[in-house]
Length: 505
Image 1 (cartoon, helix red, strand yellow):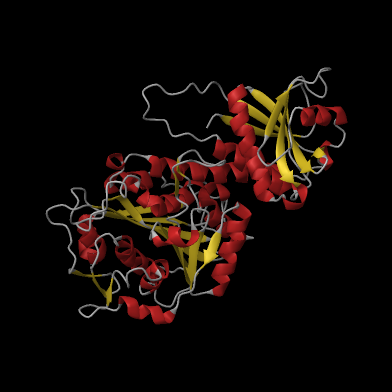
Image 2 (cartoon, helix red, strand yellow):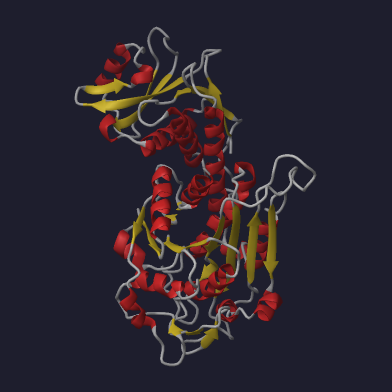
């Protein structure tokens, strides 16, 4: 990342200035923190067609050089509808526009009349960093990046000391998202299960421990579901277990601290990790598999948490589990009609090899249910049906615990992400009862596909509080968005981090 952000309470040198502006019936209007700026500037901007719609920008040079020789006005939209997402999009619009004008440094006014100032600082930081992301490492002629661009976030003199902490939190949130995007965007042949296992090991250190179970260990464990999906691939599977334990910041334990005693809570996050999904013998169409390198977005989401947890330092114990394999139609590929046994002993009849995500998660959730975790939360690009039902703005949420639903939706709202609850309708379990095994891996054609996926996964978590997030619709955006370049979005990462931090509050 070529951005550097600093809190600035007293301007020390003249710099180009970026200012948020509200949309009103009479034209653009300064917010509370910018009320002292010359009204003539707004009139000139309005005369030039600037209406201050959300994300709209207007660049100009004040004639008298005050309050700066160069200014960028950025619309926040209507004040009555502005929220934390508006502030985050303000930061994103800044990143895109300032990348075009190539200012090496700028002073950025942080709006303090939309959300509390600490939240606004974090949102601006997230927006700047997320919109600045590009995945171009495989281009032979990469666009010039220039030097570090330094943005001074301008706040009032009486700003609380928490601002630096919230700025750092915003940058860490964005770093985690960028890490997930990098993993997902990487070409599938470069991120085999073993390669991703190595990437997970690189997260080990300090309060994070990582264990990678190879194919032989999975065989001894009895992970027939994961091994079954893997049979058509030339690349062996792995199951990754990441473990974060909070530490005190003194003592001699690795990482500069010793165990911090009993954690406030123990959470387990499980992420689907199909590194490429051809559909197996139930082969997808060419168009259907074009973006299937993103079918490991759930695993990437889990990995990304451990990228930043040591620096966020929550007082919770956090586990991360990721089953990693390709789903390929090789000569020994698992077949419709096969039966595999999951770690918890339940048997699964395979009727469609392209419904493989729930099969590998059966082993991963069974593994997680054996851990001393108070809650299990899984995330997966599980069903195409979720996009039919909710489009590309919402992820689906299913849970056996109302408290989990409330907490996750609150965490998503704070991140500017959207979770929509779907019911775990008990009567639908009959849709996937098998005549030759305990369950089958698909339900009735065209009926409640996303709910059936959730109900299937519930079979493998026992009685523990559990939630399932189907992110198939939000994990990839071929066209891009204000916060994301085309490709992997890194969705749900900040939701999960918010959930962890709220549990630590």
